[in-house]
Image (cartoon, rainbow, N blue to C red; front, side):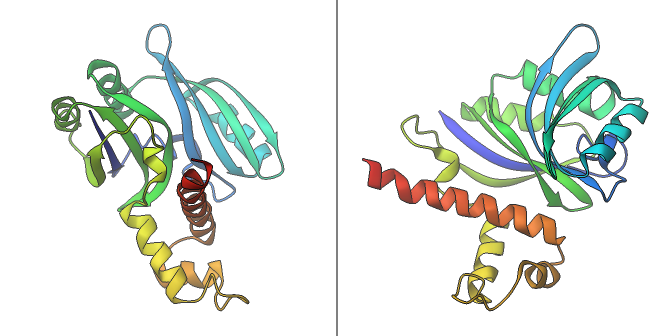
Length: 222
């Protein structure tokens, strides 16, 4: 049994991350917690949101893609329930998940990728199943392998190491003194050095620190 973490990115229309919120600077999607198919040509999803939740409600109300929706949360963090029409690229990607013999390790993280926002996804299955799912990706979708290895059911596989993008950010943060006391750089300065948004750097650092803390805590508990 194998586990693979990949980043999916695409150009043009049909971006499942930017379809509803992509044009707004006020709200963004951090992750897709879960997707489930429903009757006919529709599916429902839970989205982790960051930013202006009232703006998120307004954008959902105006969207032709969102058939039904609700937003819960406080401050600048929330979760959106969205029922959408399964069309275009989104429908093609979902068809692969339902058709191929792979298991998705939820949630799917929204990350910066070539050409805009992409999805970091971890799947579990046999080598053959993972390869066939990758081969089914529609034209216009790029896949970047971050990690591939045996799946260990007794370990938190996703927390054992960092993706290539996370390692790059972590190495720069350490080199520039982000973890020194007192700190010698800021998230804004790291973002400028890497060409990323400050919010994206902050989110990546939180995920990195969570993974490293989990990996460190496991042997202490055993």
